[in-house]
Length: 253
Figure 1 (cartoon, rainbow, N blue to C red):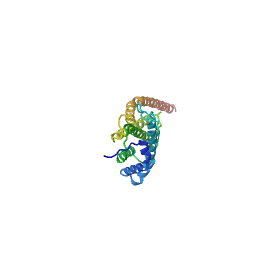
Figure 2 (figure 1 turned 180 degrees about the horizontal axis):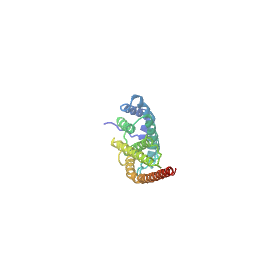
Figure 3 (figure 1 turned 90 degrees about the horizontal axis):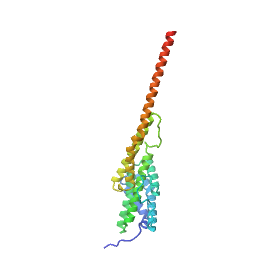
Figure 4 (figure 1 turned 180 degrees about the vertical axis):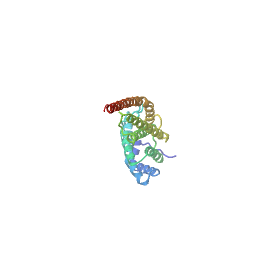
């Protein structure tokens, strides 16, 4: 019978930091071009592992929980891991990566940690596993949000004013929310996160915002239509009056 070591997970992460990064890089090679796998791994994985190590150390040496244990926020989470994941997602978007690649990248970290622990006969406690999954969930949710916030169709500004401006606002906001919902669902479908965490809350929030979007923007569109109709009618009257005056001047001359 093999011995199973009793070691705190944060110590296991610290002592195997380089090995974990190399294994994650190996998994990334299966999805990324050779020239890109090192860049994406070196950009986010070491920071994620270090933050995970810090959170585990904190939670294993106190009775508190640094990350929220109550109802998950729809993001941004306000956690160190969440903020770093948002920056990571933004940078990878700039480099041309898809959100699906980012989600799988974070999944690789957790699979690599658990796989190496099994290989080294190190137990991961239920509390440690919950923390691991919660941090993964927060990171994925914030990375998805960052993608939607920084995508080509989401510059954060509203045009408003004219009918065309209001229609553009509706289109851009609708596209942004659909992207969030689709990417959150895609992340959940991988099996790395579930519906009960931050990514599930993000999906629910996006769907609720989609439901309310027509109520929020359609009144503005109707008002813009009415304003343009009034302006068009006034323009027609002015043009007609000018034509009649011109006709009268010619007749008098």
